[in-house]
Each structure stands twice: as C-alpha cells, then as structure tokens.
Image (cartoon, rainbow, N blue to C red; front, side, top):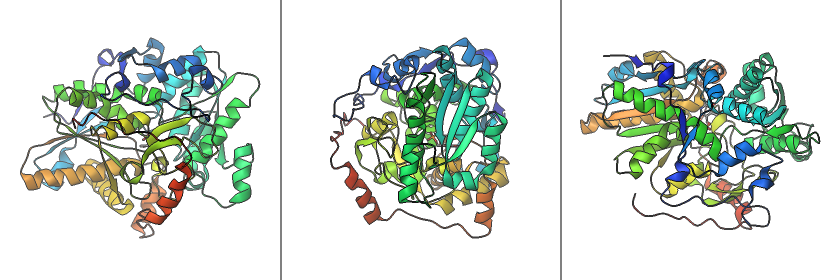
Length: 462
Ligand SMILES: Cc1ncc(COP(=O)(O)O)c(C=O)c1O
C-alpha cells in the first residue's frame, strides 16, 4: 500500500476545468456602480484582456499554455498522500487522502494561479503587478511568479499579518517584490482609513482597495492588478489540483470519493480541489463537498447571498456572493487567509445550488486538529489548512461511529512553517475562540441595503 502517488510530468492535466460551463443555475453577472452588468472593457484598466476573457469564459476546458506548465513542473504534479497515521490515531475505517500543495516554492496552492496570472500579464505587455495579501501566502506566491517571469511586484499586506508574520515579507523581498503594510500612506484609500482608524489591524477588503488604486492610477498603462482568490479565472487555474487528484485516486484504486473538503477564504483552494468533483456530483455522483471557514469570519455559514463589493473603498464591481458586508473587519485570528468578507461567486453559486455544504470551526478546535496532524503525519499545516483538517477529523470520527469505510479527500493547502508564532501562542494558552456576535453581523450587513438584490437561483435538485 503506497503512502503517496506522484504523477510524472507528462501526466499533468493540460487543460483547466471551468465550472461556469456546467453550473445548473448560471452565475449572475458582476454589476457596475449604476447597477447594470459590467462589460469586459470596464475591467480593462484593472486586468489584462486575456485574463478578462478567461474571467467571463463559458468554455468547459481551457488549454494550459506550455510555458506555464514548464514553471509549474518545478513542484507539480503535487503528491497525493494517504494519511495512514492519522487514520490509525483516530481508529477510523475512513481512508483519508490529501493533496499536498505545501510543496510549491511559496509553500501553498497560491503559485498555481500566480504563475498563470503573471504569464498572461507578461503576454499582454504588462511590466508591473500590484496585489494585496492577507497571511502573506498570496503575496509571496505572486512575488515568486513575477521574479521568474521578470515582472515588478508590489504587495499591500494586511497590517496584522505584516506584524505577525515578518518572514513572509522577507520571502517577498527575497523574490524582489516591494511589500508594505496596509492600510498604507501610499494610496488615497489607505490614507482615509488611517485617518479614521489609525490602529486598525487592516483587512483584505482595505488592502484590495489599495492595490487596485495603485494599479489604475499608474498612467504608464503598464501596471495591472492581480487577485489571489475570489474571481472565476483564479478558481479555473486552481482546478489543476482536483484534476491531478482524480488521476492519483485511480492509482490508489479508489473508485469513488464520499467526502471532499477544503478551507475557504476567497474560495480558491477549495474550488481547485473540489470543482472537478462538483462536476461529477452534477452528473449524479453522491459526494458530500464541504467548504470550511472560521466562526470568526463565517461568510458562507452566516452571511447572506447578496450583491456586494469585493473591497472596502468600492474600487471593484458588485459581485453576487455570500458576504459579511464589505466593511467587515474580522477578529485578528491567525488564519489570515480566511479573514475575507466575501466569497468566490462560483463557490457561492455552488452553495446556493446545494452542491457544496459550508461548515464553520472555532480557532482552538482547528489548532487542536493541526497539532494532532503534525504529530501523526509530520507536516505542520498552515492555520488556514487547519480548518480543513478539523473537518476531516470530524468526518473520520463520524465514519467510525457509523462503521463506514468512507473515502475522504482534502486539500492540504499549505505548510505552516512561517506561522509558528500562532502555534506558540496556542501552546501558551493565549489564543481564544471568537464567534462573530449576531448584532455585529447585522450591523455590518446594513451596508448592503442600497445594493441590488441577488436572487438565490437554484434547481432544487441537491
Ligand atoms: C495556506 C492557505 N490556505 C487557504 C487560504 C485561503 O485562500 P483561498 O480560499 O483562496 O484558498 C490561504 C490564503 O491565503 C492560504 O494561504
């Protein structure tokens, strides 16, 4: 019985899978400030046109350019492991498999889209890319990709993570990127927030506002913005994870997957692993697909499905998604990459349709699961990943109670070697649980009152 399956480079998937082509109820369009659907040319100051074309594409399969693959080969195909030691520790009849995305140069799944986005920008003649980052995983992934492709990279990093995770900032510098704490004094959006809230821990919504502003105000026309999650093209680039996993599960002789799990911040690693399985579910497979999130930032489990801005200052279109309101500043928990008010519209629509089930977990339960993982499987997970592991442990225990040999697959989205301060605080008893209070949630949602409503279109099949 193998511990892991490693595909050869010539077995790598050569096309990405686009769930937009198969959703039983179609996605609703992004809207401009006038409430009308935006057109691709309206996005042109923000993204290069080749990426905008992917964003709106309805094609089921999209070819992965050879040059992108040639960089992905540095760590892809990523290994699929069977977590035998965790199974043993839990004494569960479930078979637990995980895709190890921590083997990439930046240590997470984020380079899968960073490399693709940097490449498309370069093809379009762009020389400089701006972005935001939460925990620093995305910023370091884009810094890595830009460095290999010879592009300049500017990163606005959420203040709380900038302070908590100095090593990610150093990684970005090593790859030649310029990283500043957000809110910063470099943009109008940043200055306005700092004036109102000088001690704010920052948020992804604020950092996105700054990065978009920095791109669109560059008059040379050679700068564009890049987003590490949420948008359709990002979900698309990540599907290489699930497509590889399918081939690897076959080599493990698994015919069927019962449960697929991923943590969801903006939705990209979850989508990357799960969308090929969502397609199977649309076509009749009986699979439970779980997106996990923190109770402190419970976008999918407690937010409404609504039109909302992707950022705080209103520099983005209105997206149809689950949201906690674009002004929401989540508690400073250690899973920085899960502290986002919104969610990918594709993931959101899959939840509306009932194809995906969301679940929220407390910070302490996640650290407990992460430590159990590290002490059985060895690799130390990122705090974001621990939200998937908590769910895996729960499902494996349930399989034991039911006496069922379930097959559980999850995305091990990144390692936690730059996040050890969080572990240390956990061991010192300094971390607490923080479920978002209902009055705070309701207060935040008031901001949605003046936006167009997003109907929950669904077939009712799931
Ligand atoms: C390791 C890791 N997992 C998960 C996430 C959540 O992002 P997403 O939902 O886009 O996968 C992040 C974001 O920074 C991350 O760094």
